[in-house]
Image 1 (cartoon, rainbow, N blue to C red):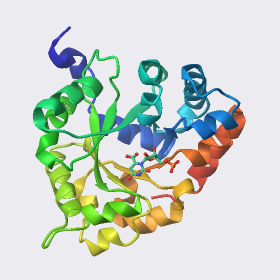
Image 2 (tube, rainbow, N blue to C red; image 1 turned 120 degrees about the vertical axis):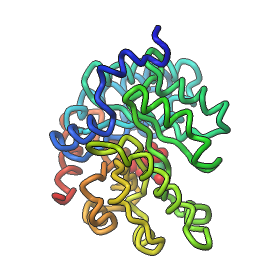
Image 3 (cartoon, rainbow, N blue to C red; image 1 turned 180 degrees about the vertical axis):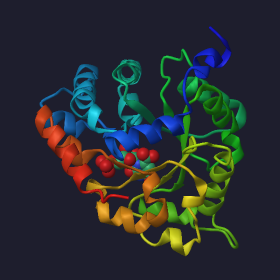
Image 4 (cartoon, helix red, strand yellow; image 1 turned 30 degrees about the horizontal axis):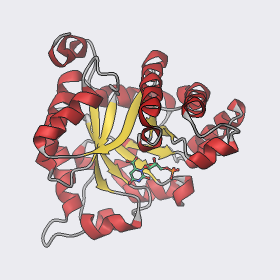
Length: 287
Ligand SMILES: O=C(O)c1cc(=O)[nH]c(=O)n1[C@@H]1O[C@H](COP(=O)(O)O)[C@@H](O)[C@H]1O
């Protein structure tokens, strides 16, 4: 195997360019694949690896073509141990096969030496868990993510770094800072990473759809970051498409709106899932 799969990466356009093309063609929806135990039960599936696999592949097959990307939530596979992680491997391979971009929502972050191993797991060609991109937590220091940022760049993959999360507790860490807030510094760091990108950069940010006036209050200029913005919080957490447009303003064209439970609760019927995804897309204002 070539080191870090660099040969395959040469054939692959950068993640930001691939995501931009998918968003322009399919619209800005990211469909979350979150196999919560309650949803498995509601779908008439067992809370085991077989139920997980049926659930995940049904979502991919039903709504994959309507979505610019899908986002499997790793914890909901991990809670099934090795059998759950094997399902996740097969799901990620099925995404590649179907031509649907994947975001592994693993929220990884660690000291540099260990971070290199996480990067290897999610971003290396040939890794069983290789995804098109992975969510990262920068709260051990943005630069501790360097092994993942570098490997993503080398293999044409992407990352989404948590900036302002959708949960109310996030503010107690992300809003602090005497001059520039923690979140503003994370956005600045991502912007520097994306500076040379010809289209959309490949270092994305996670900014919740629910953050309200925080971007303005913290003087964060998201549009300048040229980053794909993963915006969770639609539907189940209360945000609407109109909230996204108001919250993100000039950066709205770079927003990938993500919804999980609000779409998934329509299953297991495939046409009901497709209708729920279409309704979510229809609720997103044009940029
Ligand atoms: O990184 C994420 O995806 C994420 C960040 C964040 O700030 N808030 C957030 O809800 N998420 C994820 O987005 C999904 C939201 O799910 P629903 O609330 O069901 O749409 C879950 O998988 C969360 O883990």
